[in-house]
Structures are given as structure tokens and as C-alpha cells.
Picture (cartoon, each protein chain N blue to C red):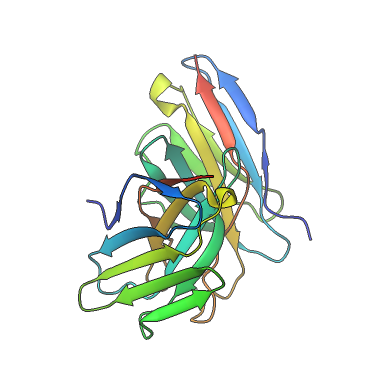
Length: 111
Length: 117
């Protein structure tokens, strides 16, 4: 059973455009929703995270939108750059447990 | 402050051999997690350990796989009698002792890539 469903699997965006990646979850006990970024040959690294008591969090060009009633959250990358080309993972966890990850989205930003 | 250290970075084994992957967490971190990554399957949770204690092994295959995090030394993920389907990247992550509301970040190593011939 996949607890965190991520889409799309891959995404191509023009430089300067907006990249949007979506995730849906099932477990209402989840209380922490991070996004991780992974470059080829490297380990994932935390990009931005949100708690369910807020609907949006912004850090620079990266924004998480969170819809608790729909059990969905999304990552928006504004003014996408070639250096943003990477694999992005959404994740979720409930207190005291390990992070559960989505299957990932490969983003390519064309110049 | 050194990050999470994994070794070996690349490991080649023949079917039936044993693979041992090691992970040294960040300084001050006492929680270790192992994940397996296959193309198009994302990061799959395997096991969550604290020093000398397995907290959650719900993602570990029932046979051939084991993990430990001793009082001294690195955490070790052990795969016995490897098969071709075990070929994957294995990532270790660590977190500090207090997994409270204000933080939940996992710090990942660069992975160990196992190839089974």
C-alpha cells in the first residue's frame, strides 16, 4: 500500500517557468510533510517542509501549498532554473516513525 | 561537522555472497534509518534504529536482510546470499535524538550502490 502518491513522474519546464509537483497522502496521523531534492549520484537533501497547521510555506523560489481537507500538498518552483534539474521527493511521517517517501519526480529545466 | 558517511560507495557481489554496508551517522545523532532506492520506485523505508535497539523494521524483507546499530561503531546493513534483485542504491540517514515538533529533518549519506552479478 502506497501511503504517499506523487505525480507527475517526470516534468520538463522551460527556464523561467513554474514547476509544480503534487502529492497525496492517506494517513491522517501524518504531521510533517517535507520535500527532498536529489542530484544524480548524491543523497537526498531537505529542501522545504511544512506542518499541517499552516496552508502555505515559502522559502525563496520554493513554496509548499498544503490542503489538509483534501490530504494533498504540492511543491511550486518559481522562475525554474537549469540548476533545479533534479529528482524531487515528497514525504510524510507521523511522530516517532520514519519518513515515507513518494516515488519521485524527475524535473528537467531546459535553457 | 562531517555528514553521514557511508561505505563502500560501490560494491559488487556475485549471487550467493554476503554484502555489508556501513553507515556512520552525523556527530550527535543517535537515530539511523536505512532506505533502498530503485529506479522509478523512489526511496523505500527499510529499518529505523537507535543505538542497540531496532525501533521499526517493517520495511525489511523477512529473510536474508538484517541491520544493527551497536553501542560503538557504525550501523551495518547486512544482506546474506545476495540475488540480482538486491541490486540497488542503499541510503542511510540520521537524525538527532529529539524528534520533536520543531524538527524532522533526516540527513542522508551519499549511498552505497550494490551490484549483484
